[in-house]
Image (cartoon, rainbow, N blue to C red; front, side):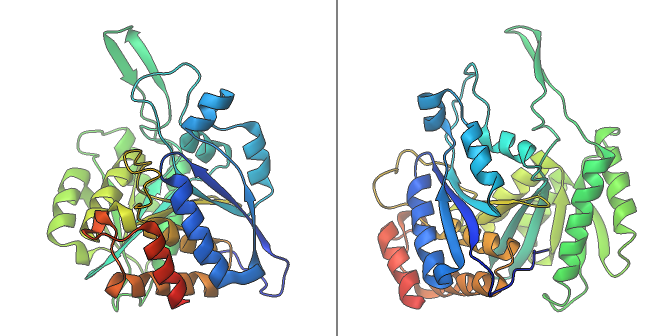
Length: 341
């Protein structure tokens, strides 16, 4: 599931995008750790997107940013703040970037204690396809949920290949859990279910099971250790991965990667947390974990493993930020990681 990269080749070009709130703080922290591990293997270029960018330029995702990203193998993104009400001209830059760069797979590993699973979420359609309209303005709003065979085939194929790559990782046969609600949404989720099972049948070495999304949340809480790779449509995957983060220590330590065929955007799963922005207490571990996923995806596997080892060592006995019931600062955590390098 990663691209190969010649260790003697020219540096890998990656973009760093701070975004809003605590985003710039945690991205800067992660870049320091990555640079300490990778040395001159990475060349960073700065780009921008988010609510602050929209307020200044009128676009949350400027064309100049797209041009920068098209010249990179991937990017590390911090967080985005979005208005809670409709604003003319504003559209989520993350949703738009996923569409523009065809980042069809959202990958969120969940590791902690006995839990070692990955949620693979279809990233381009579902309820997040952006098709909303007024049926009666101010009275009835309608959102269209889109499920296609093509998008389902490629996300399930991605999930199956990921499960294959983890074979033996847990000491037992790879397991793919297909999540849907086809008993109610018979056409859309019915298509997702039918297509997913058809694709998975081409991977006989993988055990395949189905779960309705509501019972999946229940079972994840009761027995999270049984899961391996979980594949789901957009909204379900979003909910399951956030719920799973609570099982392994919270949103402050979980990273994610938005993957396409030629580009990867990695980001922490937490939000912009404007209430603590600028106070120096944001937990950078989720951004560092996201950076490890980015390194893995662009082919710097050895460096990705090393960053993961630093995070694992920090989890055992490193200083804790307030979200982890400690009083450490962002700088304290970065210092601990750098000492481990």
